Length: 486
Image (cartoon, rainbow, N blue to C red; front, side):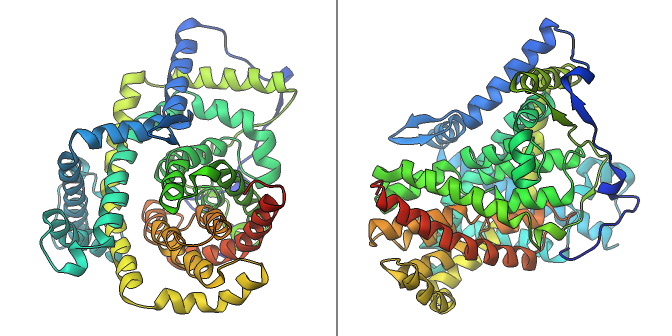
């Protein structure tokens, strides 16, 4: 991927083949004000925006309605959620196995059978086939609580199963409902048009990418990925834009950061942590998009390109044009119930495709962290850097940052007994890393295999992000101390 040249074939259209229109309010045709499509757009947009973006207080934490909905479902019956998780894992493994056996010429599926199970959707590499199948043999003993102690006790259950899988198995299907409302019925076009003046000059991204970022920050990185995948399939993003969005802006969400802040005892400075986290994410993102390897990713589309027009005008002009584009899309789109049902189906399929991969890799990472000194050895060279930057507990901070690259929860909880300064610094770095090999990395590799995103590419980007984030976060934390915020 990295270092490759822009090219084009029957399945990939390079940016050179795409022309972006230059528009102003004088040369665009605004849609006629009709009540039904206007209400359809407003209702779909307000529903999706409320679910993902509206901050609410719930049980002493700032979160979003989607998180409350998930908590409500889980509180009704954890067992039902676990059984659903097993069903999704089994479904993904079985459908992948049947499809792969067909493509390996071990069995032969008729055209109708291939269409019925959507064999192309489940086809993957032999590695990910194996990961999805292995997950079954991890999930069953974890669910039953019977098996070797290294598997059914400790972090594999509390982190990989309870904190990660039981969240993802709900957040993607439920989120898919509202993501599809935004994508199908005009919300994406509305937000994208308004955000162009910020996203284009700072990050060389379409304005619509602001919605993906907001969905990740306020909802979940998995929701951000799903929305990005949805737009990518429609020709709204090219490969470089997808790579940038996923590796620079799909960071830890506010609810997760709040949970970690509660565990580490720094909820009293939670607004400060969020401020520093957002600044660090934006600063590092603005740097990384302009240098290799991200700057060398081919600007290719996998579908008929649908780039945003480059619009210029006043704030009022932008709003009028954005509203018009949203209503136009809603008028051409499906009904709200149909869009919601399709989103639920697509989200469930996507969950089945990647859930096994996430469980298998998360388990391996957590077992390495619990039973070896691998991450301590890796962190050792960074201790002098932490000392130079004035971090109070340099060894703890270095280890936490390195471990967080493997698993965010595990890394941040290593600083429970550290000073407030170290906690804020570590949380600023780890919350902004975006690439975690127990969750986001395998999800990206599996979900965007047609780009392709590879583990070696993500490893390099994680190193670069961390190298930039550490001094940026140190400067921000020292600045917060100076002005009396912590």
